Length: 216
Image (cartoon, rainbow, N blue to C red; front, side, top):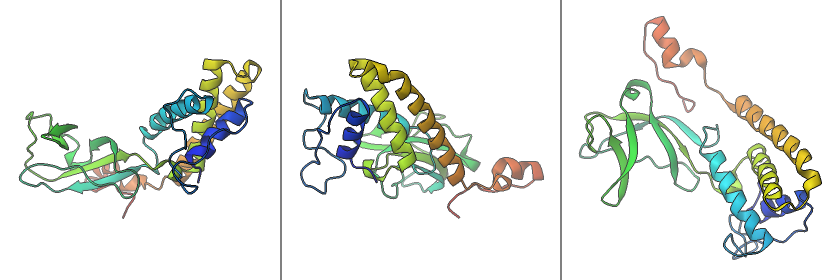
């Protein structure tokens, strides 16, 4: 897997620059760089663009950052957020599915604790368990290579466009971004193991109800 320092240096190389980033607090640091994203160096600027593109990618629904058909039991009528398996623990998007799909919810702060908010009653209270799917933020070094390759190429394109490090490369970088996006989406399709015949929509056509889950 790709570390943050490796990713920054790959972006720099794509725009014609030498390596500048080093791992963070120790040689084994995979998610931070020694300089970070708050200084005025070229590597630091690159890291800011990289962080933005990484988050934008993770806010989408991919096989590697999504949990499906998860049941949330109520505690005193309230629904706490589920705990992702691995990753950073940060949930980016959440929505109800299956028998709960007509129950609109959002994430909202409840006196310092983020819980699901019932948009039907405008309260934090629910009357039955909820089934949800959610996207969570995967740790940087655990992002699959197909997605990381896209994030790096998109960052190189954005950085080169903003700072004109290598204007002659912009068209080639654009083609690289398009290719890496295609490969990322192809990888997602190849890894997707939902059985269409087991979805609630297919079950409704057959006249019976079923749950959709990749995890059974």
